[in-house]
Length: 139
Image (cartoon, rainbow, N blue to C red):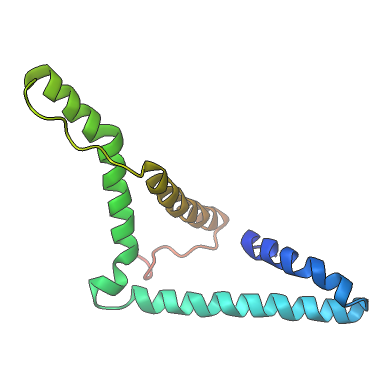
């Protein structure tokens, strides 16, 4: 399988089933059907994603960009804005209260890394020459 997560899921499912289906031909047929069903489910999700991306409402089509911008802004505040504002406060405005700090940075990093991982897969597609030029066609 070319999609790593599908291979992992299938391996977890196939392990116990090898003992239940001793006939090699029947097991191969079952494995093939299982893989095809996983791919069909992935294609169905892809169609849902395409429909969402083409929706005219920003509340439907814009949730992924929203998450991306929110993660980016939060990361910028956590690693740049907070420290810079705190330094300026201490240097020039000692009586000013401390700026708010972010809690839950581990969750933020987890979401951001997941999104960047998906972006990395897109880069690999482009390098291999199988990616499209734009998400809605050529630009």
